[in-house]
Figure 1: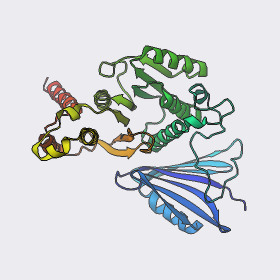
Figure 2: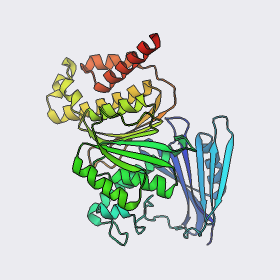
Figure 3: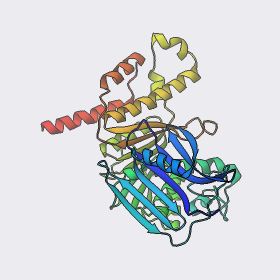
Figure 4: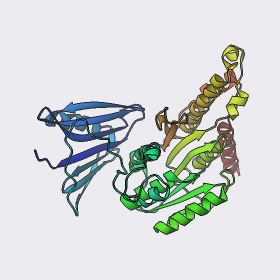
Length: 379
């Protein structure tokens, strides 16, 4: 059976509580051609196998709540962008070479954004791939993690400004697996005009990353040694990424992002010690006796309050599962998109903090920024 349709992605949700993304592909089940809709809600995915007309109707209904639709056929790529007023802009591009034959098998191998067998030089140098493009078995978890992160990046593409250079700041970049992946995906595959700056305190790591960037010809990917709290190298940033920045380094990075009015924030927090030191209360005393429980409670409360602070600053914020818990306990990703609509949660958040006897750094930093803005207006 031959079919031109390869895949479709519906993305860019207008709300934060509904469907986040839908992936569509054809499949053959008992000699019947169906279309599978993989529907993402929160950190879960649901599947529907529908006939052609049913699938088209379902996609039409879902698109009412989405901003972007991308359809791949063997010969064309079609992108539809829908404005808030419902106006659709459609762009069609002919493929230079036909797409690969569609795999119609029901239980096919998972498709990754960076496919195994397609050599990516940075993955070879970072020890994730071999020279012939095969994923090193011992590094497959890292390969999955990189692809999972790129899925989050893919989701927010409709939110980023178009027609100009975009600036991305990656705080606490470390060995920069994900930084290189982000540049490769956005610049090499998606052809975005993008500048990425990676920041870390380890001089040897920064030197190595700059060597690799220069070797690949990544002219707008640079790495600098510096502290998150003190960094002042740019005046405006489109996206801030902070992956496993330890303890309050995440708070300084999020505060910087808000100050820059960044359109998108992607943050995977790490080692949340601050609230663990503060949290107390008679009602919780029996529970807090157990160090492991106290640590996990403090980490979850820290990230939930970070999300609430960002909502207050005009961001639509989600807390999502970054990677399976079996691979790492540091599996929460905070994704925030600037909408300008501020959540009026001040009293509720303050009551929560008072009940737990905590005062998280991000809340304090943002309050200081708010006071500074008020003083500037008075002047």
